[in-house]
Structures are given as C-alpha cells and as structure tokens.
Length: 162
Image 1 (cartoon, rainbow, N blue to C red):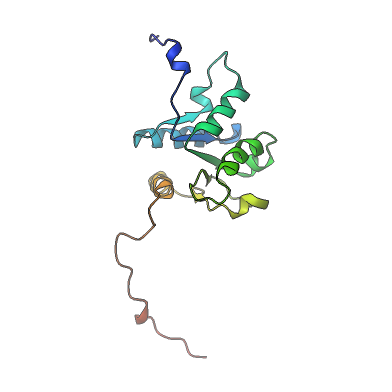
Image 2 (tube, rainbow, N blue to C red):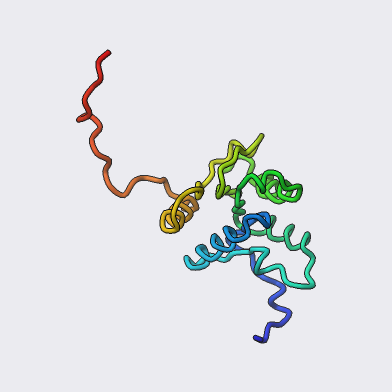
C-alpha cells in the first residue's frame, strides 16, 4: 500500500468525468484509461469513489467540477433513474454546447430523448478498438474534423440518367 494522505481527498478539477451505468462499466473504464494514456485527468466511479466516500457527493463534485462530462450512452443509461441528474448537471452549465461540457459516447445503439437528442455524440458502437480509440480522441478534440487527406474528386462518377 502506498502512503496516501488527506491531500488525496482534495483532488484538483479533472479534465473529464466519465459517467455510466453498471451495465457499461467496462466501457467507462476503457474510456478513462484511453484518456489517461493521452495525459488527461479523469474521474470515474470505478476507480475514484473509494470506500467510505459518499457516492452522491462524489458524483455531484465530479459532475460539476470536471471540465467536461462523458456520458457512456446506451439503452441502459437512458433507463437509469440516476443518470438524468448526472448528465443534466453538465448540460445546465453549457446548454448551448459552446464549451462541449457534455459529450455522449454511444456504446450501444439507442435513441436519446428530448434535449439529449440534440447533443452530437461520439459513436463507439460496432467499431474495433483501434477505430474506437481514434473516434473517441477525435470526438473530444475541439478542432474541426477536417480529413487529413484530400477526398477523391466526386465528378468522375458516371451520371445516372433518368
């Protein structure tokens, strides 16, 4: 065991809070690990909410203090009674999405309802790990998603006549 003292309880604001339901825990842990490999700081229940802490207070802190919240989106997440207030905290801080406080990462196909349907998501459903990592990191990048290479010229396609 390491020597972790009281200062560990006063963590600095994280770059990301990864919010998920138990059905998507493996996805959340993967997302958190990928982000930490890139040098980001991450708050995630599976690793950071330690025995003796208050789950609801930890969630409140992470949801309001992290720069951005990644919601691991699935049908299970949409059915969860606890998920709504957790993503709503990030949404309320940036309802127009200008700071991209709330970033859904869809791991299983679903149809987000209401206000959530207007938030552009990262799609991780049905892709392999390499593509998933690229899509996750590109989706979190604030720059435009301009292709690295010029697309092929579309004018060479034969024109279909009616």
